[in-house]
Length: 115
Image (tube, rainbow, N blue to C red; front, side, top):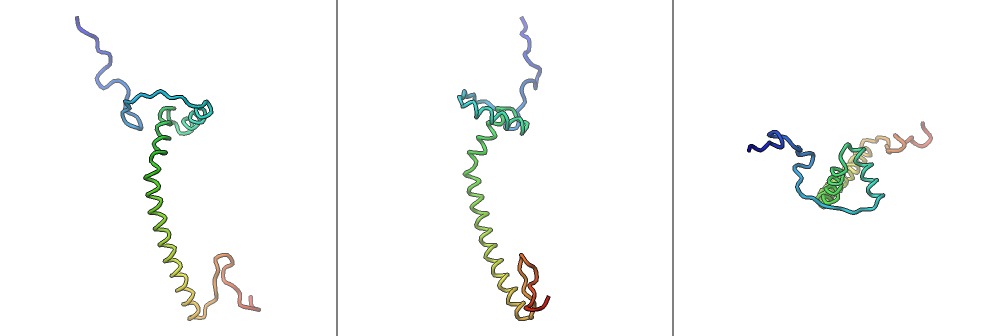
């Protein structure tokens, strides 16, 4: 007796956003948290399961994010230092050329008694 094929070749569930999922896990969580996850899933267009995977991946990936943030922070500090040097140089050049002062909040400052 010949067995029927259950599915056509290539049929069945296709891997989604997170690839092929094989591990199964039961989970108990507070109702409020489930509601928040359902809301987030609806807003993102993911399934509840997909949203949970995405949220966990984001939370566990923070170690890599911290490393990146540390590098960005170092770059910004270095740029800040260079900008400070540049501002001092510009102020010196303006003094030498006799130009008016300029502040970020007020624009060119008026000389005393003149507008």
